[in-house]
Image 1: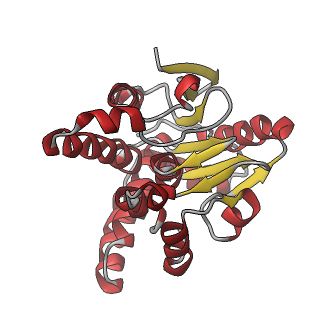
Image 2: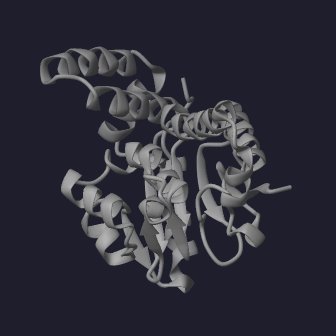
Length: 257
């Protein structure tokens, strides 16, 4: 299997892209399995947070160029890029927060995968790039996710030069949340995952959906929409429990309803 799942804590599942021979390239098979895995975990009530990482030397080198070269037909290229887009959309539209845990290189569609995740943390020596221009293939689909996380001029430099950026700069421009030594990365990512997993599932689901939808709206429409979402949230049992627990100075007992 090129995708494996591990339970690492209560409510926290780790999804590992495990094809180190191709630097975890996003082939048809890998993308299909990853999409199905994410959909499965999204429906699993016991999974509250998903950590996504790569096996072997790095996170992901992007599309499998040997496979891409062999496709040749327009319809097959379109099928591949549409499939990749479905994976990215599933991460964004899924109910569960997804955290990218990155070591080594995250290039092209691999960088897109990092940018698509709700949170991202890396090792200090991780690198990120959209290097398609170097092989005559502009990173058009990867730029959709990355350009929604970083400033357009910094994005254009990455796209036009193909040059990799280091973890500290990736943090500065908002591509990742933070970076740590390899020895601390696991601990820090698990800590944030456990914190999120301790919250109300329903509240996280409503909030994540609202966050991404309002970003695409004009200001007035965004406030109208989020007012409705907060009202929906307020009618839930967990909101009443959370407020009561705060006022009564106790820990909330979530019903996830």
